[in-house]
Amino acid sequence: MPKHLAEEDLNILVQAVARYPEGARLDDLLPLVNLQRRTLQRRLALLQKQGFLAIEGHGRATKYHLLQRLPVHGEQHLVRPSERGSEDVTLDEDGIPVSAEGQKIRAYVHLPLTQRKPVGYNRDFLDAYQANQTFYLPQAMRDEMAAMSNPFAQQILPAGTYARQIFNRLLIDLSWNSSRLEGNTYSLLETQRLIAFGQSAEGKDSLEAQMILNHKDAIEFLVESAEQVGLNRFTILNLHALLSNNLLPDPEASGRLRSIPVNIGGSVYIPLAVPQLVEECFNQILNTASAIEDPFEQAFFVMVHLPYLQPFEDVNKRVSRLSANIPLIRNNLSPLSFTGVPNRIYIAGMLGVYEMNQVELLRDVFVWAYKRSYENYIVVRQSLGQPDPFRLRYRQQMIEVIGQVVRQKLIGQDIPVFIEHWSKDNLPKEDQPRFVGVVEAELFALHEGNFARFRLRHSEFLDWFDLFKHSVGR
Image (cartoon, rainbow, N blue to C red; front, side, top):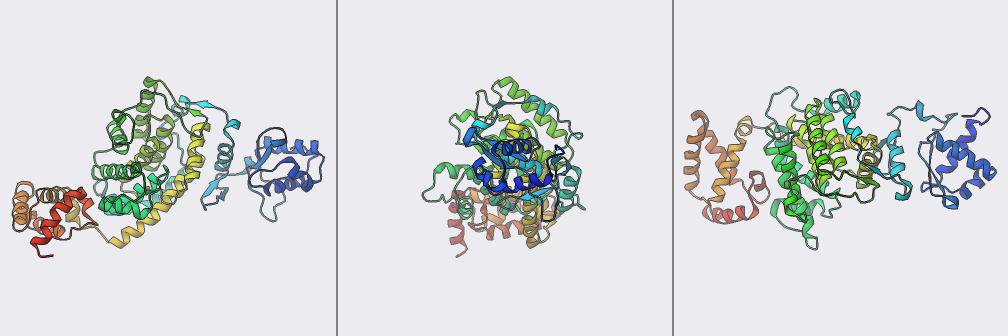
């Protein structure tokens, strides 16, 4: 800063710009600072060069936007960007903490498209990331998330145990919030009715119902197959097939990497168009992600790079959000349901990745969303108590037997006979009597609000339940 230009003068000018959240014009500022027009323009240009302002427009339409926070009462000088740490945050309009770096990204991507430089896919952004050497999440951030997140830290349990324990709540939360971030207008209650009872909301587009039901199928796939899924080609392609089912113009595009160019609405970013390069980068992303040891870094890495590549014709962000849950589910950490995440800041974070290759704003969203999810699910888990180890061990077998009973429409004495025969063929002798009792209890407790956990269709349940309730005199 030139010695002759007092920082107090710049403070006054910054405070003047701050009065106009939508951007200040030169004529707005002149009465507030008592400067000649040319002097004011020079000082604004200096503030813009130092990173305090963004400039939008040209000529008389030029607007100045404040990028840095104002000094708190009692500060005698502007805090320069170089003096700030990532802990220097402000709350956005929804109460989400945004870092200084995130604020700069948000200011840039909120500029009109004509003011943002068109960019293509930058392979160097991916190549520069070295697993377990490069980190998008600082160590302190990863440590904080690890300390708060593992309710089974002292136990060795199968992958997906935590997600299965809170499965009913997770299924609704993640299906609704991920769909909501795509513009889906279903309410939380409408989503719950659709998933539990198969009831579509009146007046809603059928594509919205399909989107939510696709999320349900995809989440069931991740949780029930937690020990087999991973950040690998099989999982991600099948995840896309589930999430895009009946939503793409070309049905054969589900579960396949794209062979056509795609565009990003509302962005100046142009993704790769060459299929061979899409394939190469897709494989590189998965190889890198699989090598990352920290589950939180893994989760965030795929949230950044899968949508940046746009490997599929559509549904890329949905795939990335559910893929981010794979390392969390496998490590029995709290899943990430995106509860309360506003669409505008999530999209701004993605645009920061697309157009600037900067992850800080998306990282702000990721960390806040994870903490919010953790706080929700720790309460849910406490209300459920500790899981029954026997039910946990034989969960898959219970799903299979109950599914067969319902689909074969067994009632009366046919139920215990079938269960006994099945258990003799598939379970250790010492566990058979208890297994029969547990399965019978589950069948008598089955109703419209809980049948989905046994992977039953609504029609299958209703056909069986109609016969069953008459046989027991309900």
